[in-house]
Length: 133
Image 1 (tube, rainbow, N blue to C red):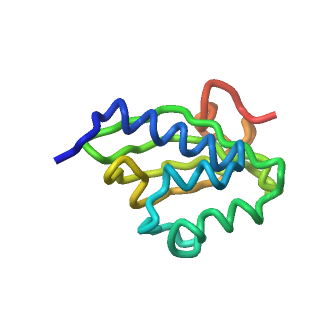
Image 2 (cartoon, rainbow, N blue to C red):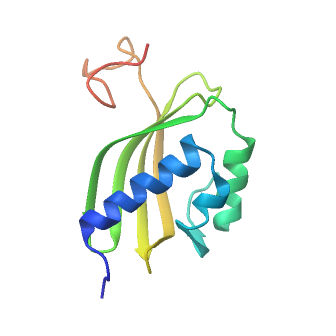
């Protein structure tokens, strides 16, 4: 049985992502990620340290923005954008996080390059209400 509400879990994920990806405060981030953290992403080494080391190696220009966020029970899905990675395009992500005992305990993601207006067959942006500059 969950000890936290879906709204609390959404707020936890937003604060955790901002602390790690934008502020790069690794000491503070430890309070959000379980020391038994399970990582399902194919491009991140196992555990909390695998994630933290990936961010340590990322350019200082890395920026995370969250968009739509949904929660049911202990599971949260957040639609976001990772920019400033030194890649030709930002990554648009759907991150799925399972919360346990008030910490991020498990993670899956779906990533794709953000399309420009010229690349978008629908003519609509993939994130937010405008295309990347």
